[in-house]
Image 1 (tube, rainbow, N blue to C red):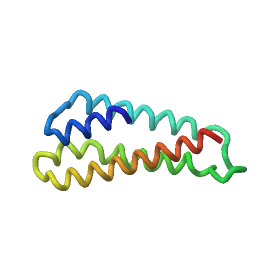
Image 2 (spheres, rainbow, N blue to C red):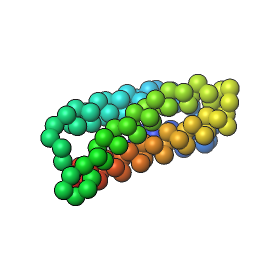
Image 3 (cartoon, helix red, strand yellow):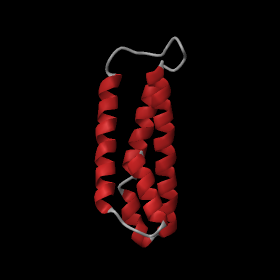
Image 4 (tube, rainbow, N blue to C red):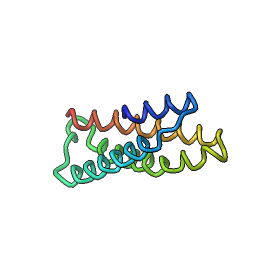
Length: 106
């Protein structure tokens, strides 16, 4: 997430860091893969009501991962739409991260 914040701040200043963006995407994909592997184990958190948080986090991380590569592609052609897509990407990823923390903590 720190790389994502760095990229967003760099975007607001008009700069580009394509290598950092690629690393950010690869780390996100690896994290999603590890979460999917963790979800294969026994269910956890059902007693506390957070049993489905892990699945919801995986879905939201998947949505964020799907939207991410389109941001630099749209940045040149449709700057406003790229900003909206960036906000959607960040919202999905942050929500997924909070759900993941709740799921893991219980």
